[in-house]
Length: 367
Image (cartoon, rainbow, N blue to C red):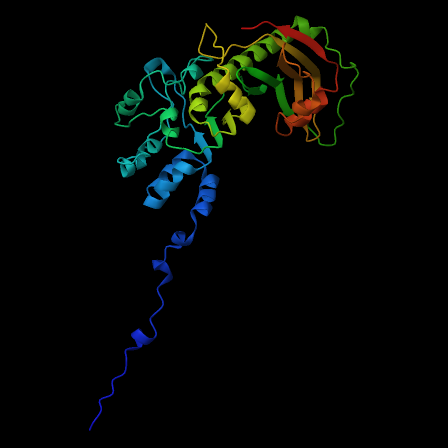
């Protein structure tokens, strides 16, 4: 009797390892970790790109909690053009998906100074008309309200305009920060007629020989009038931003914080969870003259320095800080805790230096 011995193929006994290039490592990551990654991505356009990577990504993006909507351009509505995200290059890849709006995002007509934001984000037309609207280049326009509708669990929403609303001449500093509930809670404005650098870091700052008093020339050379214009303009810009956010706040009840800023760093509107809930419960009072929230009667505190030398060598000429609260508010207007933290450095230091000077009280009627 004879036996035929055959050896098993090596490949069956010891299978060759699978090339690393063939392994999808994301398949081994839990959904919770992917959502943390998407929260770091945040930008709505980048999240839109993630949606076309895989069905899994597409199903997870709606549950992102941290979303950033960055507007690319602002154009006057004189010729019926729009706020637009420049994303036409990837729109075709996702035209059939529910997130196609993320790739062709346009933010409704921009206003003439102080009135444009009243139309931004405001759904004045039906959603269907916004979805079907197409410009001459074939790019479909969508409102931010429609785009954000795809997100179900937003906790922190940031919207960034490309520029501030206020037309400020070169060299002039004007920054504001406002907190709103159903109406204005507080506002801080920091301005200066010029911002320069000290000629020498060793140069000693000017001695404070005015005892914090405003010089007589401030009233006669238009200095006070200019500060009043800065204050009113900043309040109008802030109230216009607040007005346009109402549809988004109403729809996204999971929001814990909302910030509407601009790339210039000119103005920041901020709302925390309590303020967001207040707006949902108590409807805002709209101004009859334009699409913005009515500004209530105000108590204001003003600090002024003809020249302010900051530790980093920045020199502010005609430095002015204005703190504002509604007249009916029980909170102290010149509370140093919220004034000092309102602005990034070096302007936070400027605010802390100014509030040590003499305080001037002003009042303003509702408008």
